[in-house]
Image (cartoon, rainbow, N blue to C red; front, side, top):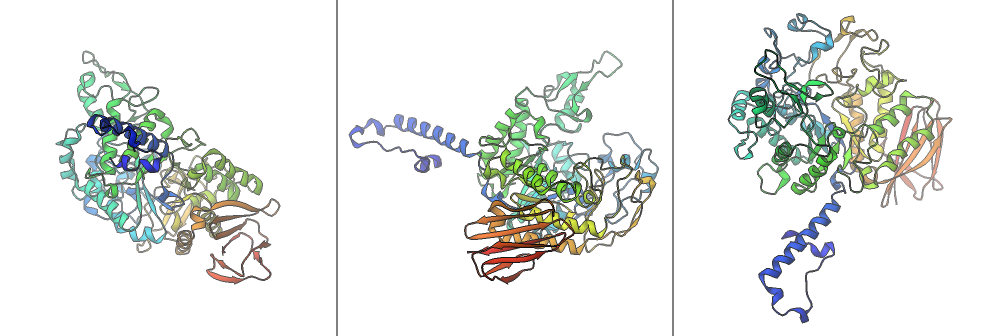
Length: 627
């Protein structure tokens, strides 16, 4: 009935001329017909409106957290060997979680006894990061000017990355306060019957995080991995137990079932990119298996509206969707309808590494994506391709503008690094490559050591561009304190906290790397952290930086100087970057007598309506004009 109340705003009227009102139009039959028509029309209006991204996400600053490596807030729930190695037949005697502050490249006694390279052993390492650890650092996150958190998977899983879900309706038992009790609770349920679902301690801890984050004005978005699961996923375990007689036999892409009459095990199935540890859900060309979809949708609603009362303020604020291009788009169409029916203001973000206008358009299935094309352009111009001209850089960014509707441009996650790439500082320390390529020990020239001071100076320029350009800047945990590391697993080190004393990082040939070997001090970079905080505060202070239009006002190929303005209502912000080693004199006409230097936080007097200043080499300037 709420939709009917709003028909006037949608352009519909239910009133009838007096001359037609002969009594029939007041009967229950007629009213039921009118209600049905109105609801259908309202649904149509709402369906069309679904392509508009939520207003809260425009220009917001994101912080990506890899839970197992962010902060250990409860050592009593640390992972144990029986879960870590449930899929492996290994001697686990002596295995334990690793000290948070230990040398990343130092192997434990247990690791030293294992065969394989350093990389091979990292999949078994745990540090004990959990949800309580995130709760304990919400004030820190808020101090960065962050308005939304994107959490890598938090659902129960075997691995440290959690992309091998064992369930979608429970948080990982090692993220709560009672892992054993949570595991028992899960076993007592009928997983495909939501009526039997209960709230575990880990679930409640996740809901506590959401509540406390919301109280600080921070949105929370979860990672949805709906293409595949882990082999411990409850439905897949039933298939392993019951074979073709399992009620879930059609949930996965099974190639052949085991024949009990033969000594061999003929059971075979499709794993994601050939990884048998990640069985893929069954599907048609345009959708997932209906029963799989029902389970996913029930899980999604559980986290969006935990008490099922229609008030979604106690639930998550949206979803980041893993390997989105590999899931049939028909599923995403249904997914969008489902999510928006629960909370119309929720955001839907796709993991899409390429231009993806088929997913984000006026009738698209996603509101936003992880904007790797932004990262490609910025990394090429700022540090990878010194020969890239300013006009080529601007053209690369304009390709993004062309690819998507204007409303969506403001919510694209403008990231530079993530859990799937090397660290931003290490990218800069290893220039001249294609983004995220040759970023591990296979590259004999890859510098794996602590970046030098000039690297962090360049990172400051990159961060300044992230926080002043159109879109929603996203910081991968630890980049703001100067964490370094090659691609996975080295981009997933434990977070550097200023209050902790870390062992030196000693990198030897045993690491597999050949460049950058040596001993390095490990501590948070306070100077870099201070800059990120200033940039976050500046963005929150300026509406023009968050939601203003973009206009390029300067492009000098020879000097590698660029400038653009952001404008919203009576506020204009001028932003300039000089990537050369020489200073440049910048002039720009302004209609006021003074401007605010947002970088130096001081007012600048203007003579003859002309802003004139020296832009030093390898620097940036940000000026605010209020008319």
